[in-house]
Image 1 (cartoon, rainbow, N blue to C red):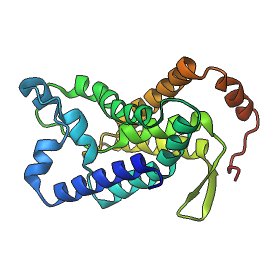
Image 2: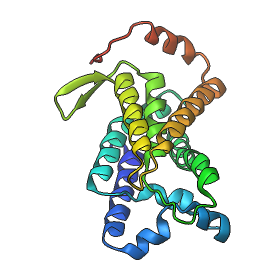
Image 3: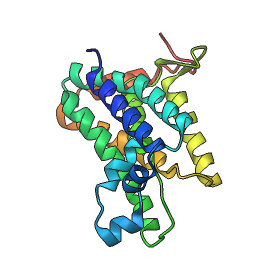
Length: 214
């Protein structure tokens, strides 16, 4: 199977989200609830909440993005000797956890606060990819061609806008922290395992293409 980690993560997200859509008990036990984490030690919610979504559009948007960026990470992490799928899984799951920490600290005494979604992990994957290939092409709705970096910036801008509206249970703040983690993780990984790649990355950044190449 091509891109087994990405496909596996998407499959898990889809299956668990579909179950939660139709089972309020599953939703209640898996959603991120900072108050419950603090008072009841339900630390598993840092992971479980990343595999459920608010609705079909939320699920599609995250999985569409993960498919395009995640498969690129599989190629780069394996092909460039950066730890392969182990590094990819660390990026994804640490992205889930770390991106939720600011929200947990802010809301841990708020009984009514809940949030969900793979946003932190997906954001980490997006910005990890941008480190390697900022000017590669992404086709929005199969028609609008833009660069990966532009897509990433638009993605974050959308999330910041939605966070300010604050009308759903989606943890939009996690996008920002997931993005920062994805950048830091990938830069640290390169520095530790293949520092010579920085020359290639810097050279790539010198040749921008707003609408992408290839």
